[in-house]
Image (cartoon, rainbow, N blue to C red; front, side, top):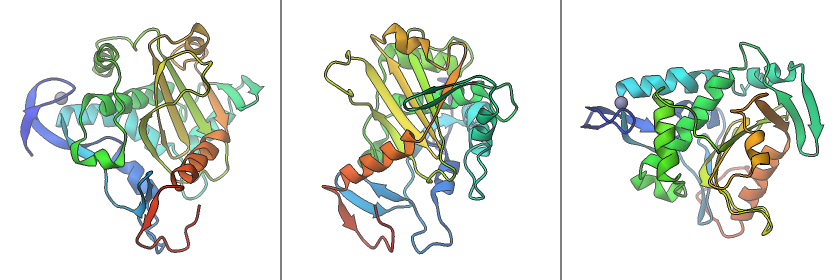
Length: 269
Ligand SMILES: [Zn+2]
């Protein structure tokens, strides 16, 4: 392991080969018994089966362990399983406070061991921070850079170290897939486009892991968006079909220019 300065604690240490998206997510995307075993990567340039993972020497052992224990392990344990079980969603469905909106059902985070809002928030913060703090070098062809502002990046670092609050005047939104068998798919942190020209200019980044979508906004975030952030009571989460539909639509859109490289077997979009 090379020596260097850990990006989180800023101490000199042996650095681990750190992942942008946890290794366990790639495992969930693999189909060991299918002719196409590895995830299919879709970009505007190419559609290809790829075992490549986005990783680089970023964190010391201690900070890697903090990330695992404070968020990743719990999120992976409660994410969708091949058996169809999705513990996190099942716990959310037991929430006693729900209200319907056009895009899905807003659920107040339940008091349930299978739904740990602190771990979800920590996990989201750690991935947004990782995407911003490091130039992921050789993996650039896999992803679009997703930088935060230097101020918010520094605040998130302090939050992740447990020495500061979650950045103020921002909004973190979490959506959980309502589908019975969420497709195993992942979207790297990517800057969000404005949904219409009338929407104010705010900075926003999003990423998805199987069954979950995380969106983070900062800079000029209107009060109505701040008020629905999971950071604020009642810590509400959206249960929706739209996450998967949007990913599928975006992939279909990319496929207009994307060239298929190699065989994709019977997989179609
Ligand atoms: Zn460290």
